[in-house]
Length: 465
Image 1 (spheres, one colour):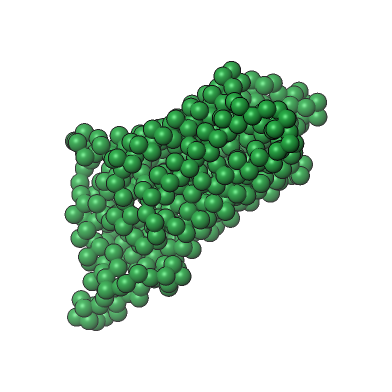
Image 2: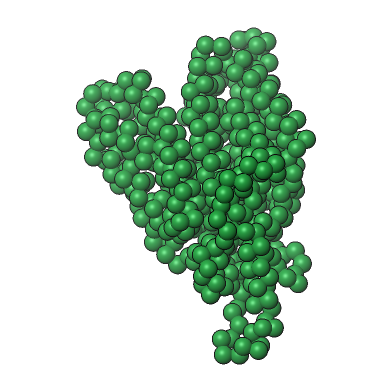
């Protein structure tokens, strides 16, 4: 809440520590992306006769390496969801780095594929924890005017990390890569030392004095002089904090959570909308398609090197998420999400029709078309469908059950990532690319209709309720 202020520029001094804190904690999100991006180039080496493990890994072992990060993410969602309100946001952030550091150690010391299984699972725990802890931390320190922009940065950092991981693993030796990558979580641990716990959590634990200091820190406000009690009662910063404190406590966050908090009509409706959002996000192919980009290019007769195409698509994704960051607090969540979902559906429909009806001669003569279409789908998906899911989920959930609700939602999200990564290759190889794209476009249509009818605009919603 900002008393007595008009709309501020994002470069305003008030937002300074909110932006710095967001960029600092997302070092961990970037680190997770590096770990995800490591896999694709490394599989070629691990499956060759020059495998650092000695024997080449099999296709079955490679698929387990890919999917175990999803199971780890599901585990991380649950573990950190349970710890978040017990240990606090900041202490949980310290614990995020440990599984990721262990992942790189296991890669370096690996003597058989079991080391890599364990490492990928641990990387998933770290990533799953990031998707629970960091969005809540950012939402709780951010003002309404920049909350959407700061919260939607998560996928941008993941995408940047994936490009870094892909590039490093492509050009560095197998044993040099983890030596460099392990420095990222170490930098993260050192960087977050100076950050304060969120005011909401401190108020929840009855630590009002620390909560006040934290509030002033993140809002970049000057605390009233301790000696002059009369003056402090009329201080603008003090009045603002007292108003914030009353709003937080009125949201019932200090009360014990009961089953009634989950099983009431408004909350059931919220979880229903979140479930539709997650299903449409994953089964529209927003994640799975980009894991099988090279195969899609091959199916459409692209003559451009698949690795080059992957890097181009990754670059488009980062730039498009930057656009989402710039637009989300101006246009609102609904408009961006629905526009993105409709545009993505049309792009996938075009790919399906092209595969169904275009001749091989046409595809050969227009080999630029697959890359253009994939860049379009990536761009439009990255403006809304991909980055907004975290902020919409957090803004929909009531403050009292936000930590547990986010954990459950992210666990469901991770479960559907695992399902989509298993379904899509089967669909593409058994039913064909056209059928897969028709299904994805259909899910976009369902999401557009249901969310268009029932999803409320959450822009500007107070995070204290």
